[in-house]
Image 1: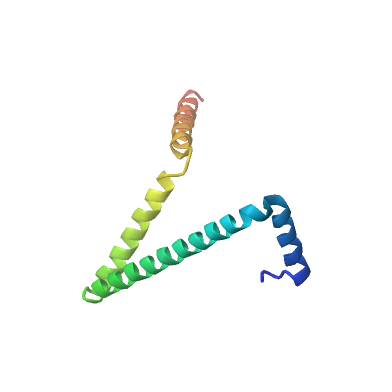
Image 2: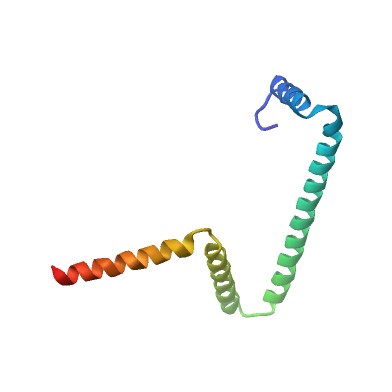
Length: 108
């Protein structure tokens, strides 16, 4: 279990018991169980979605299939990158710095 021995696991359980108390432990266990169930559901949905995509792709030409996968992958990555906090501001700062660099080169 993650390279932890019996004593380490027991110590962690005792600390959790002391921090949260007897009344909160069943609530915490229930929450963890629901979280694990949701994670399993998400995994199974993704797996089913991938299987459907694979079935659709079997009918297509292999070259088109690879091209579509690469294109979709790139689009997904671009969408995720756009969601990074502060990225827009960083791009604006970089563009402003490039403009300043261009102006200073002109005066040299």
